[in-house]
Length: 97
Image (cartoon, rainbow, N blue to C red):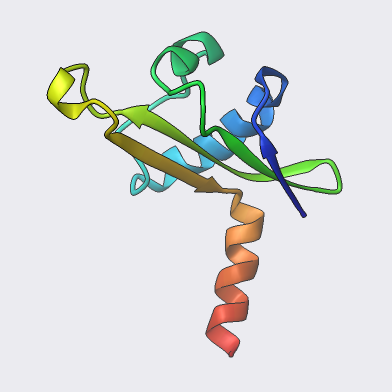
């Protein structure tokens, strides 16, 4: 496994994992996947990462500012999403230990 910086070309995989999170109705209040441009405009350019194994993105994390008010400068909300296939494996393993 490798952790690397998220690239715009990763969006299809990132959006698929995001959609899986949206479908749970636990991960976010969002109801649909935004375009990359819309998502990009609401997340910090730094601190965007993906977890890759055998050229498959298994998860991602990114930061978004909590407010544009100066008193919240440097404060961010973290989003972490893991592909369902990996989450199911982890849950199965953690339950059998």
